[in-house]
Length: 243
Image 1 (cartoon, rainbow, N blue to C red):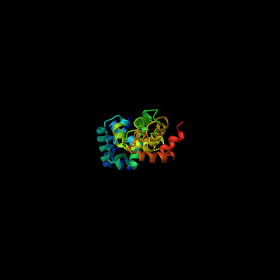
Image 2 (cartoon, one colour; image 1 turned 180 degrees about the vertical axis):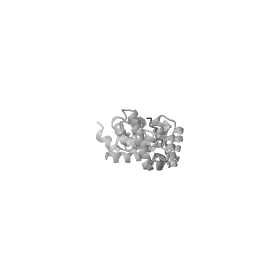
Image 3 (cartoon, helix red, strand yellow; image 1 turned 120 degrees about the vertical axis):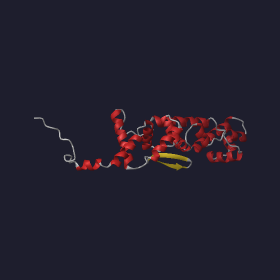
Image 4 (tube, rainbow, N blue to C red; image 1 turned 30 degrees about the vertical axis):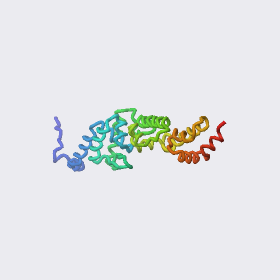
């Protein structure tokens, strides 16, 4: 005897919970809109990156090898959707994922799918000091350091460094301190004083010329900084250390 399949018509479909949930059309449309929004792989990468880190346009563009305008376009869409938010730190604008249950769920889904499709992807993956992203930042900071130490006679501003090395000022200062242990100004002052001490002992250059060689237009200001650093004036230091 042939048994006919009973279709889930209104009289038969008794799963009240499912019937109730599936009637929430707007909820399903909202979820569909979110998945549609993240259907663009670049936008998805930006969202994922901002789940782990607070970044500016320049850093995001560098991490994803995209142009600044392209990144700004995606950020605008994500922000208007409520998935991300922005805040200003001095003159820089940073972006991060909005802290809510919806974004936490999206983040978890993305990483779960990544772990399924990419066996080498760790679902607990974080951007850390060993990632290509930060390695790139560290390499750039080392170039900044070399540039500064090779130009000790010049007064180079953070804004100039930011433009020269395509790195926002806040990130530049933060990563530099992480790599070298102190601020750019403090670190370069040490290099200036060490070079000044070397010139005092190994050359016959007058103090005013040495001051200029290490970035001080004023001999008096240089002498104050030098004495504060070595606890001796330039002349006293020269007498004490010169053979």
